[in-house]
Image (cartoon, rainbow, N blue to C red):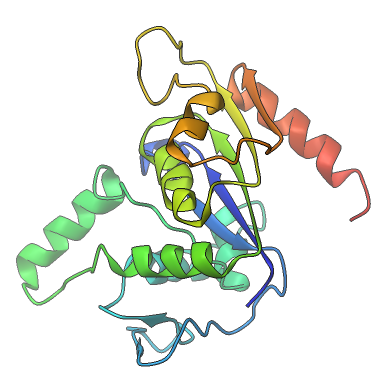
Length: 215
């Protein structure tokens, strides 16, 4: 397994989903997943390489199937599918894709998606990673999914949060990262910063600076 796990969260594109926590291996990209013994193969279509799960197949495989059908190199899903990088979307049923899948099941009652299958993968990533870092774009369920799982390993090793939410109402979206320390979701000594600004402006600036530097 790779030594680092990066958790990213952000709003879904075009209202497709309310949030996308993305579990991305730093390296090696495209490596076959082996997440433990006594697990069964759970890929549902021939185009999906094996991904292991205790329970069944979840959103990760469905997202890859969507990405395999996108012919646009500017698409995040295109590259996630190409390199088989898992994208976990805990709130996908609250969106147009979830509604379409629900209607699809009205005609095929045996069609099921295991909503806990992706949680197994997140759990294994969290427990096996030597380092874990978070970039949270916005708030809500996607932000919480990233920080929640990291409390089981003693907290994130670093975190960046981009938000326009206010702190005074006590919401998770507006909660500053220092609040996560009290839960053990962020290590007390971990570098962390909250950027108060609109994500569609801030994120491209961060990305431009990041990708302009050699890795």
